[in-house]
Image 1 (tube, rainbow, N blue to C red):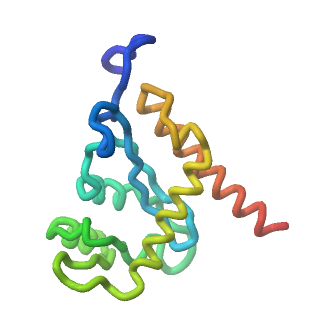
Image 2 (tube, rainbow, N blue to C red):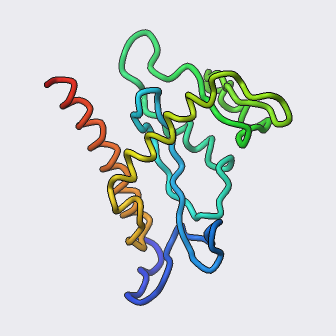
Length: 164
C-alpha cells in the first residue's frame, strides 16, 4: 500500500472533493453502469466534483462478461445528453457496443427517460445501504469494497426472490 493512512481527526480522504451543492463540504460520487433489470455491473467512487463523462470509458471497460449465448457482453450503452462527445461515441464502437446517446441541442430520444429511470432505481437500491449513502470511510479501497458488497447483496436478494 503506497502513501500514508489518514490520521484519526483528518477530514476527507482519497476520492473526495468539493460538493456541488455546498462548496464548504467535501463529498464523493458514485458512477454506475447497470443492465435493464437493476443489476449493477460496475461502480466507481470519485470526488464529488468529477464530471460523469470522464468515467464513462472506465465503466464500459469494467463490465464483466455476461453469461449466455451467443453474446458475452451487452449490445448497447445508453446515456443522456451529458455523455454526448466524440470519444464516448467512438470508444464503445471500438468495443462492439452501440452507443445510444442523445445529442446536445437535439430533441431527446423517445423512451430514453424510461431507461434512465432504471439507473436511478439502481442507485436507490445501492443507497439503501447506509455506508454507501453516507460515506464514513476515508480510504477509497474500503468504499469500493462496500459498493461491491452492496452490488452482490442486491443480486443475491433478487435471485433468492426468484427461487421462492
